Image 1 (cartoon, rainbow, N blue to C red):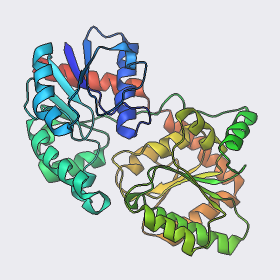
Image 2 (cartoon, helix red, strand yellow):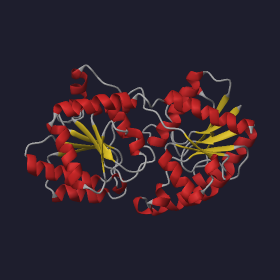
Image 3 (cartoon, rainbow, N blue to C red):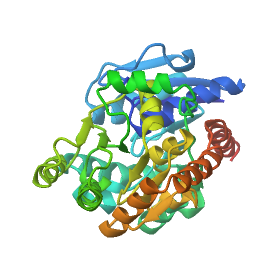
Length: 370
C-alpha cells in the first residue's frame, strides 16, 4: 500500500494530536512494514528535524489551511498515487476525497462544549466534522466514550474503530533522585509539590483544583505547593483571578511549556498528580503520571475511567470538597500513596504505542481490502 499521512501537527512543541501522529509513524518504521508511507505537510507548520522515520515529505507552500485541504492536498494525493489516506487528528484530510479515507476523531469538544473553544476554532471544527465524518471510510477514535459521542451526534457506528493510545517510552520511573533534583532546580521548582499537566483552560477545571487546594491549605496549613504545567488557553484569565483571590501567588507555580525529557522528571518529582478535567477524548497526562510512578487523582467522566481504571482516585469534576478530601488522603497517607503508585505503574503498562500502531495497520488493511 501507498499510505498518505497528514503530518501537519508534528511540530516542535507537540500537542496531544501531534504526539499521536509522531508516535504512529515511529512505530510504523519499527515494525518494518512492506508499505510505503508518504507524509503531507503544510508550510504553515514547522516540522522538526529529522523528519519522522525519514519518510518522504510533500510540503505545500500555501499557508491557508482551507485552501490546503480543498486544493493542494487532493492534488498531491492524486499525483502520488496514494491507496489510502490517514488524517490523524480531529478534522484533517482532503475536503475532496481522492482515495479511501481514514480519519482519527479524538474528541468532539468543539461541538459538545463550544463554550470551551474560541469562536473561530469551533466554526472550523463544526464544518470539518460535517464534511469529513460522512465521507470517511473508517473513523478511528481513542476511547469508548468518544465512540459513544460520535455515534450520538453523527451516527456511522459501523465505521468506527476504537484504538486506545499509548504512553511514550520517555515516561518511566527515575531511580536516580539526583537527576530529578537537577531538573527541578533548573526549572526553579520546589523539592515537593502537587502537579497538574495540561492546557490551562476552562475545560480542564483548573479553577476547581485551585479551590480544592486552597481549602486544603487553610485546613492543613503547611502543604506542598501546586505546580501547573501547560500553555494558557480559553479562560486562563479566570484561573489567574482565582489564584489572586485565594492569595496563592507564592504557592502556585506555572510553567508554560516543559520539554518531554524534563517533563518525565517533573512527573517523578511530584507527590501527587491531579487532573480534574470536565472532558477528555483520552487523557495523556494521567497515563504519563502513572508510568512515572506518581499517584493520580482524576475526574470520573468521559474517557478518564477507561484510562485510569481502579489505579487512581476518581472524583466527580464538580465536587470540590471530594477533590480536596482525596488530595488530603493521598498526601497524608504515604502507604496509600505508594499503593496507588504501584497500581498505576501496572495499569500504564497496558497502554503501548506498538499495539496502537498494529491495530491502526489492521484498519488500513481492512479499508484497502474492502
